[in-house]
Amino acid sequence: MRTTYDEADDILVLHLADKPIVKEASQDWNTHISYAEDGSIVEVVILEASKQGAWPLLKSAAA
Image (cartoon, rainbow, N blue to C red; front, side, top):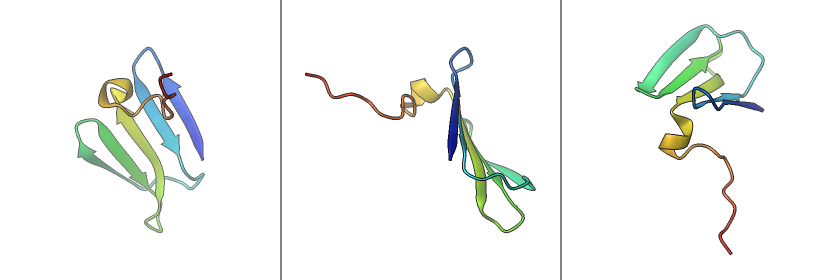
C-alpha cells in the first residue's frame, strides 16, 4: 500500500494495488473508489481529507 497526500488541495490517495483501473465509482461527494478487472479495490481517493478527519492517518495522543 502506498499513501499520498496533496496538502494544497487536501486530497488523500490510498494506492492498494498496481493493477490497471477498469471502473471508478463515487461513494459520496468526497470518496471515490477505483476497481481492477477482478473486482478488487485498486485505489481510494478522499477529497477534503483533513476536513473529513481522514488525514493525518495517525493522530498523536494529547499529553
